[in-house]
Length: 309
Image 1 (cartoon, rainbow, N blue to C red):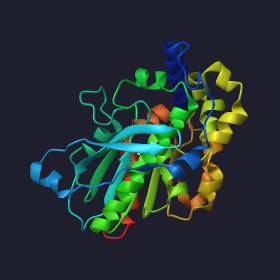
Image 2: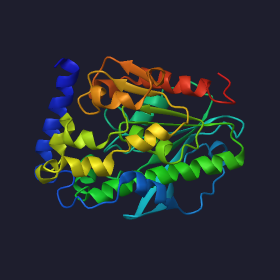
Image 3: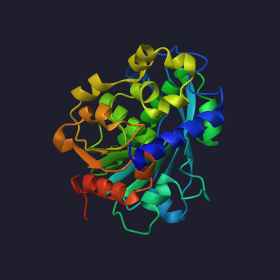
């Protein structure tokens, strides 16, 4: 194991130790399959005028109630940039345990690193915040005692993205690019598998075999021991590689070769060779390499209708 993988391993072990017994899925493994829950999830009517972001000069966090087979959850979205309906729109989803709207975080959020450098992206940008991410990372994980709530979280974010895509298309945006990192990458790929209504998908650090993250990767140290004893159950609920393989929407994934959480050897088969970009980093070091993420997203935008780069 090289230094990139060692950093991943140490990071997860320390996080698991801090959580003690309050780890993922400690209370229940009962849940419908993720792909089914996401297909059946929906949100209340999505009404917004993105131009208001440009007029006020300040982004407002919008709250959305999502109905899923595992319950009702609250999610959020915010316009970070609005150029007008004639421009493509990026919908971006943050990583696990990260509040993308928080200020003052050490090193900044993934949103800060990707969109806050002052460089012009020439696209509208909407950021989605998942359920349970209006709190600390530790509080979020402690809320994930039931597998059903994790499935509901992912299904809710997917439903919010689908409602945004539909509304943006209705408004006349020429293309929507869905992207996200880590947890957000899984949501990106889940949306493609279930809906596939965006013009381009640019996931970062995700494949289609989510169950393996909790059963065989370094992240298994975040999974409760009783849940780790049922790897077949976790993989049956969380994997969606069959639906992802059947989807035909344009996708290009970014994976890290030395990632010990979203393991390259396990997840790369989600993509055809020309659908995959590889960086020689780990999960932690790669997450901080925002220049790679920016290039990855800009390439997806350049290939989307209506982009003037």
